[in-house]
Length: 252
Image 1 (tube, rainbow, N blue to C red):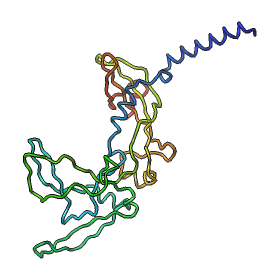
Image 2 (image 1 turned 180 degrees about the vertical axis):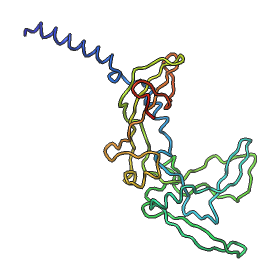
Image 3 (image 1 turned 60 degrees about the horizontal axis):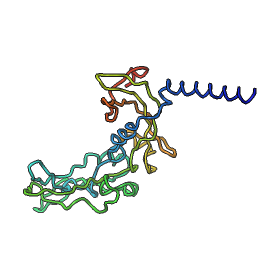
Image 4 (image 1 turned 90 degrees about the horizontal axis):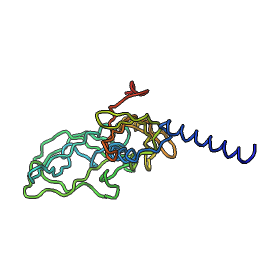
């Protein structure tokens, strides 16, 4: 085959591949809104952390915080520890139950939770900011109110098993379809755990987090099916996980 024929063959082959790429949705560039919107949806501490504490936590004298309300006032309320038992069952807290005497000398039953050694390695004073150290904001007296000003900052203590859950890649896509004036494209994405702690791969983590990744570098989560809804103009949109069509129409 001479050079001219080789050139013609390569041109035809390249053109055929280009045409195939345009017909196969998975060969088109990923819309830039997809990683942006997925990251916004995944940027929730609850995806990789359990809010609980501060520790030690005493049910007889629970820690308190100023809860700001609309109207420029705040009330002093007890911080609940809704996940303390879950964390204890996972081996990250230890529990003590016994009698205590209050300031009047009356006995009352109390439950105290403390971090285990493993739990201490995962604990953060604020799960939204790893750089924060120390306990939560100063306690107040239950029932107190504050008017004319409200606290500027409220910490959320808890245990984190990775720094973040973040978009990694689009695994598959469907061809877009028009729906109510918008363009809709179904796709499956894979997320990764950023700076995962060893505990996140432990079977115990499955009871604490919405999803857990597979062990690996990177540590990847199972694929998630959702859809990009593009508004007219194609520059703005949103994700809608309820939309199913095409070959994924029966997926949950």
